[in-house]
Image (cartoon, rainbow, N blue to C red; front, top):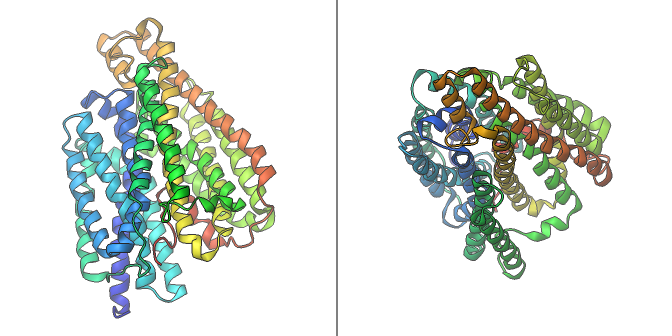
Length: 513
């Protein structure tokens, strides 16, 4: 390594800035959804796609993007991804229709999918010392984690003071700074053990996920009797089965299905996916509840999400201390209990509920994730051979991103179905498009009864969705007590805390070779 100490840490700073933008983009849009519903005339289906398109592209492209970096050079692909991220951010900011915004968000997700694994893959090149590498990795993870709480707060302030496109413009100077620093400070690296790219597998995985997700969203938008929705859902499921079959036959698969033969990896992945479900459902509905029912502005919605972040931090710290004493099985089960309790309390919310009650239950949800998610991730990774840790971590991240995509689609369908059912005679355009449209119509007419009816219908839909999440968490408690090991000795205190932010986390050794 020819770079001196100053250059190495400056390079890390550049990577941290770039990762902060991804963390911001994970949550910054949550407070903008109500505004987008009105300004872009977006219905529930479009609102779901604003979030889903980004996470779908992120999950689908992460593995092939890492393979491209291995083959053609990580610095080269990382620089291209940074430039693409900046261009896509500009396209998002100035989108004039819902379709344009969705398309730009897809490109944004593709760029982020390359930035995440490749930025982490260059750390071993920059830092040869295990101690320095551990410190650098913690800084990298912290930078991505900071974006989660900052996203809703910064996004809310920007929307209140400027226009919704400003939440994307903040990405541009950050990625420019990151690109300049990466170009000048980060050395090129690639994997000398070249593997052919699995192009058929990549295409099948992307097409299959698109079909399944579009099917769920179409059914939520048009109703369960919609033929196109069912057709897309079934076609997507068939393509995903073809993808799995291809992965078993090809000599150089996109994913190693043999990883699931490992008991720890299999069940750790299952619980990481289940816990992810609640996070995406909460982020999709709670900001809309704050603005449409409680009447807060965008910044107020962001600030009111802080109890969840506080719960995450408290839960992760408790998990750090209790894991050596209680072991993996009880820790994951405890996290799921807190998750189920919080979501169940949330399902009892009504239009007259005070904010303190909401703060309590979203704090419980955050604590449940903080307790259970790091241990689930550690259980999955601890059971893998060192040689397979990179691919296993990449696969685990892709699974969680895919789970988030399906969660938004499926839970959004539950919410929309109940909302329209509860509207009764008000189930007409544009009221049935979304609660934000319904509230706007009610306020324009000045009819207090209509406003209360629309808000009550939305809260009923939110409650049904949260009951689904709570039930899944409750069933998972018994499953965790049955299948997980008592202890996971390899999990250290320093590893457990950062992993709570694995929503924006990349594999710890992906594609280093």
